[in-house]
Length: 423
Image (tube, rainbow, N blue to C red; front, side, top):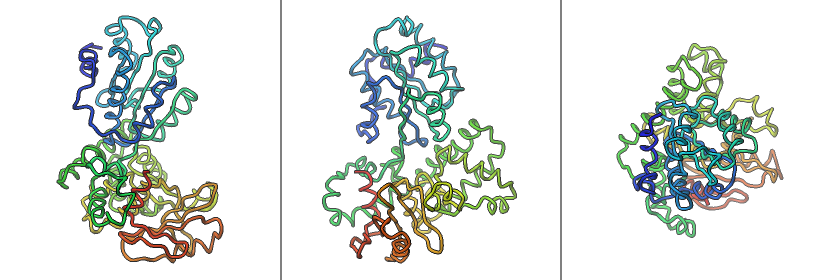
């Protein structure tokens, strides 16, 4: 490998610092979660959807690292656009920059690798280097979820910490726009009129950092389609799985972006599209791997029973629904529901003679959540309480703007609930 390529990525070898344009002033919450692990021996894996800021986070962590070590002790390389051999990258770094081998250097060496899932058998290669050289610290990022995390857990057990980098929360969106969220939390009622249009803007195209201060919806829609959805559908997933029917992948994505929260019946979808049911199930797994969708299961008290029932599918961010081209007024109720799915990471809903949008379950009991874009209707929550009795610890009805309490049911504006999830 030519040293010029490494130098283009690692300008701090000459300047001593990360270029200013790579370091936005705002640091997301995950920065502070990850920062404290930098001094530990274990590798770190940061994974998430495309364009949520993983590369920016790596540069911020590099900037932090450069405060405590010599510039040449920090290597960054991205595998996003072309496949390079990891050993070739590391050999060139040792020969041309360190002028020594890893085991001959007493200092800690920090290696930041972006889009690590593009490296063939990446986990085995990292494991070998990790075990051979205790002074090498890996910080890795990737744009996929299930297989990436599974590979890390299986091959690098005890050697790695993993972190998920979500799209921007509503609080982060506001803070990036210069709004102090602590003041809003102190007195939410006072801020309702100002928050509603900002929350709608957030739902449309505010979960991606590069779109926070863009106010052109056409540009935003094109950004999400070109840089997120199509990159995953036409590039990431075919490269990862050798997918032959990309048109089917696109058709399923279009179906979901126009109807987030839809019930998933593989047999029915297969019949409508003229495909095999198993193929449809596999393609949903691919979309989940690419972090376009997340599945929510029908609550039955046990994981096995829940997985046997029909599931719902939501988008990783409601912004993907906005990018579908459907009118916002039509999509808004579904985007509200999707926003709760994203904010709570709810694994369950309830559907059996009556339906509750989301069920949060832990050892202390269950919380039922209903989302209403218009009106106040708590009948489904009341039925949930009658069915599960003392197991129900909380009932929440989310509306556009109402805040009050009806017996055990808390009625909260949706924007306020989403804001409080990130506190």
